Image (tube, rainbow, N blue to C red; front, side, top):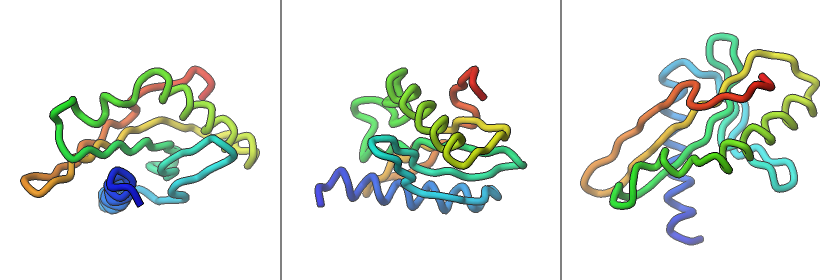
Length: 121
């Protein structure tokens, strides 16, 4: 497995632990439908949360959350739409980002609640 894939998996594990400590109920990790993917699907205060996790080993090229551009937001919104449609769910939902920097020198997690929105939810 490529190093960046291992780093991503480790970041997702850290994000799940972090969210559980905050009281989130984790429903799915790495949910996929065809080419659509959602890193974490969870519940927080009766709200369904679709979470994108971005992990980097350094901030040399910017913070991990900066990689969630408009294209990635639209992909996540599209995936969330199919998830809700597939399960026939009509619930309050939001989109969070968990940013993880993980290296030998220093590691940290940033959580961006309601990081972006879709008028569909």
